[in-house]
Every structure is written in structure tokens, then in C-alpha cells.
Image 1: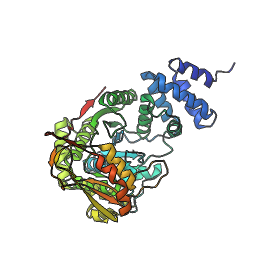
Image 2: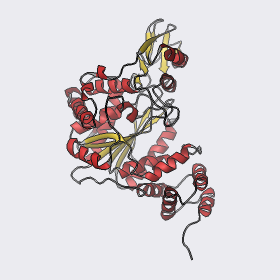
Image 3: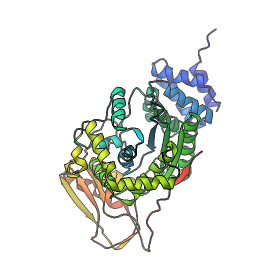
Length: 438
């Protein structure tokens, strides 16, 4: 008598809200990856998961099944690797700062990132604004680079957790992306497969984030932390607001320039702050600092010393890029047309809507509406001011970096709607961070 599961039976069980076993989930992942289970059956199972959810044990088992579908990276015990994940935001360039900064502190950092889609920017798109930089490294080259310079910032490798890539492509066309256990297992499977021993998760919420409110972000963070701890890793999540863009730059070359500014000890205060928060938690998790205060002090000194910028130069050079951009950001590709958007009124600027700024940048060419679309690394929006200030009519609010005057004009209406006004005094938008440790 055959013990092979029936996909119809497993769909029925999940439709009733029952938990599947680890072996059943492994069978689904393997069967779908090998083409033995058709799209329509896996799509039905995904929709059942979307509506019925998963238990904690089931979510961990699915993550293990995704990890086991491909290769995994193992690192020496005396070279523990750290990693960081962001759930996506507007203007979030912290990985470009954090990876070289922690590597300069002697911490091995392997970061695999994705491309942007819709209103959220992708770290790989930003990095590829640097002339010549390669992000698609095979695992052998990745290992050699990490052994040589202690860090890598590359695109996600298709041989790690390949079942996750297959399932995500199906989720994308079946309206099942927004499922907490599916999101959590997808994110954590790639982190675990890459061999990270300590992971910090930047879970964003608000107008410019995938999670609309803090409660949803907290639930997702708790699930991912539980997966990591269940797999024997040290994990902590930081909840960070994303109602206004992070920093002032939204757009690929513009954001690289801003990240370089931060590594030289300058840049926007909110980017520096989030970098220090995330980096401090990683240092404590990996055992390189006794307290968050000690870690923060050490990282703040490194930001001012220039060693992080030097490590970024090294990373760019090893990955085939023009490392001179770190000393001279003007070597990054400039937009042919820059237009200043001025305030149409006197008043208190309450906030700058992150999603609308991202939409304006998308219309300028800085993002993609569909997978496979090309991005123009030169384009985007640079904010001159953010919420919490009294503004005079005619004062500059933002710059549009566009491929042409026509493109700038087309994005103007969206950009103008992003500035929210108040008749009474307002305070800057709060940037407090909450920690989820499980």
C-alpha cells in the first residue's frame, strides 16, 4: 500500500484548518519543484494557507522544507556570519551602510538582497547604479570573497531555497503573497540557507511599508523570530515606522550617494539612527559587545573614522565596480534633468507621504511595475525637507531627478500630493523603534 500523500487530501485538510506534518510539507515543496505537483493544486493549497493560517510548528516545518530544497552555506565556527533583512520600505539604504560598517568592526556579514517591485526599492537595484558592480555571484566566488574581505552584498542565489522561489512566483499571481506564515517562511528560509548565525529583522509598518500597521508588523516579526530561534539561530526584530521615507533620497544612484554620506559620518539623522540600532543588536547577538550602549558607541566611532567607507570601497572593487565612487560620488550616473519642486503655500508641513514619494520615483523611472522591467538608476526624488517644519511659499521641498523634462512633468502631480499640510504647529514624525525578541 502506497504511503505517498494525496495533494487533494492535503488541500482538504488545510481547508478545514488542520496542520500538515513536516514530511507532508517536504513532499509538497519537493513535488512542486520537480514538476510532479501541478500549479493549480499548489495554488489551491496556498489559498487554503492564506485563509486558515499555520501553526508555529507547521511554519517552522515549512521553512525547513524550503531550506532543504537546495544548497546551504556552512561557515567556520570561528567565523560566525550575521545577516539582516528588511521587509521593504521607501528610501531604505541601510544595508549599503551596515554591511561594510560591521565588516570594518571585524564581523563577517553576508547579505543577499532582492530587487525592487512596486513602491519598495531593492538593494540590488541601488548597488547596480555603481558602474561595473556585479551582484550575481556563484556560491564559490561568494565564499572566496567573504574569506578575503569579510563581507558580501549580492543578489539572492537561486540554488539556495529554490522551492521558495518557485512558490513565491506562484503566490505573486494567485493573490497569496499577504500570508503571515508564507511571508515568514520565505524570508527566513533564505537567511537560514545562507548560514547566518545571528539575524536582525527590520520589520517596517506604515504608509510606505508592506505591513500597514504596527500590530500586523509585530505579528510577522514574532513569527520570524520564532522560526529563527526554532532553527537554533540568534534573532531579534526591530519594528521601524515607514510613513515618511527613510532619509532624503528615493532612487538608486541617489540612495547610494546618501549611503556613502552616512559612511563618511554625515547623511540624514534617521538613516544613521536606524543603522546604529540594527548594527548594535547584531553586535550584541554575535557576542562582539556586552551591551547595546557599548555596541552603539563603537559603531558611532567607526562611522566618523571612515573605515566603513574604506570597506565599501573594497567591497565594490572585489565585485568589479568602480570603487572611486566612494571618494567621489559624482561618478555615479547623474540625471539629465533636475527640477526643483517649490512649496505652493505657507504652512506647517505635517509629513511627506512615503508611498506617494515612491510612486513619483516610480513614474520617473526609478522603480518597476512588473518583474523584468528596466530601471533608470539616474532617476528619483530627493527631499529637501521632511515633516515637522514651518514652510514658506516658494521654499524648495524636493528635487525631481528625471530622464527628461517631460518625465519630470508627468510625475509632478503625484509628487505634489505627497506633502501633507497642517494649520497648526506639528512635530517631526516619530522614529521610535520597538524590539521583538520572542
